Length: 268
Ligand SMILES: [Zn+2]
Ligand SMILES: [Zn+2]
Image (tube, rainbow, N blue to C red):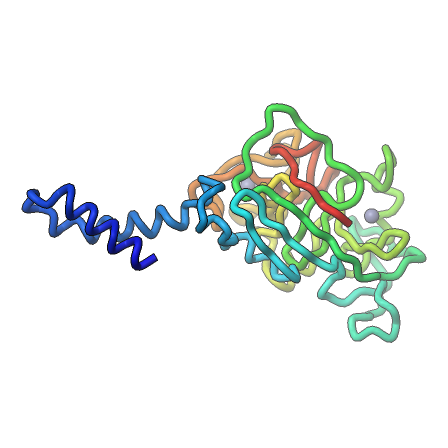
């Protein structure tokens, strides 16, 4: 990189050799070179593009994150890093739970217990709006910062979530038959323990980020969002502005009628 910079300066020096103002060039060109190199992700074939963008590194629960310049590949076990009544009772992460869960419902444990899997998410680094909306699938539709997958607002094919909400644990997640743990609604561990209700919580498969249920100090409602459950403005991680989803208290909770962008893939 240093070599390239020197070459560039030399080059600029060449073309501007007769310019008495050339001595001022190195300073701005240094900045431009640095920005240009890390911004190389806009040109997927560039060698430097394999760098994982900083915002994907916030997925602290990932076991591995790599980039080919166009997609990041994120591996995760999908098991939560927080306590749950769904861990085996001999696990250090087991914690009993009873009483009220999401929406004030009385908790009723489902018969499943958490198992460790291997998810491989392939997510576009530079998400763009799709010309045609793709519906979210059952199973993982995205990944939260602790590596637990997000699921959509259905319990099964065309089955509303309402019937299984009572089984959300102390952090509002639950395991499916077979043990795959997931969040359909606000992951309380992220919004109350690790960060807060306005924080970045993860990404959907299309690469657009998911934020918490609050913004500028007040609750986001479905009325603040489009039918895909998002909107566009600047955020902490994307100061230039980006389309993003918000988790809300009301159905569809995370995503509405599909992905805003073109989804990547997930093997699970
Ligand atoms: Zn579920
Ligand atoms: Zn927002």
